[in-house]
Amino acid sequence: MRSFPLKLCLLALLWSVLSIPQRSLAEDAVAVLMSREIAPYVTMVEGMEAGLGNLPVQRFFLDKQGAPYSLGDRGAVLAPANYAALVAVGPEALRYLLPRGGGVPIVYGMILNPESVAGAGAMPLCGVSLNLPVRSQLAALRQYLPAATRLGILFDPANNQAWFDQAVPVAASMGIQLSPLHVSRAGDKLDILGGMAELDGVLFIPDKSIIAKAVIQHVIKEAALHGVPVIGYNLFFHDSGATLSFIIDYPAVGRQVADQIQQILGGGRCAGSSEPVFRVRVNEEARRALGVRPASGGAR
Image (cartoon, rainbow, N blue to C red):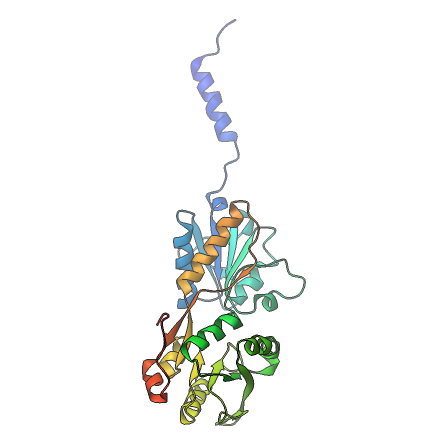
């Protein structure tokens, strides 16, 4: 039998290799969609990228019309089927990706009340929320403000009545009494409904109705006049005179998101919603001005 020419054999082998469908490099990558180009989101994503190691990440943002775009690769298209996993950073990003994921795993980060953002009937969510656990916050308060047994909670009932109702028994089990505080606004005048005279502290919780800088600074000033420490939840509160602030560690949240992605891509199950890593920052100037006993241990 006559042997097949070597050159023809090599050509046939080359053709067979070229004929195999080539897998897109993006199919081994992660697409991350950020609701906006803001520092906390980018910082979280940087932490996530560090946690993912060599796994490629393609960044996208939502423009004002709600369409995704990429800064690094202007021609990049957010086609979910081309990626191993999708990451939603911020509520608008999650709303965009959920109906378009097509079965590709979606992990979220930097979202307050993610279940409410996703809406009824949404698939089980995986990610790291911005919700600080009630017990963790109150435990920190017991450590840093041990005399604060009567705590006013500033919130809008339309947004956070359910949070308050759930927090009351948890606080009671820790020897803390919670009282609702509301802010009334008439023109340029702000009034705090509920009173501060009998309180040992005022706790802000994330509430879209009470995020105006003027409101926050007004409450901190009124509380200081009554000798009452204020507890906030980001650096703005600290810089505005809050005695304590719960600061979410954005890079650590990114690493938490990366852990969930790696677990899913490794064949594991969705870890559900995780709590964000945070630290307590003490405003020593405010503490001394109010005569609050020095904090014992913990991060600053």
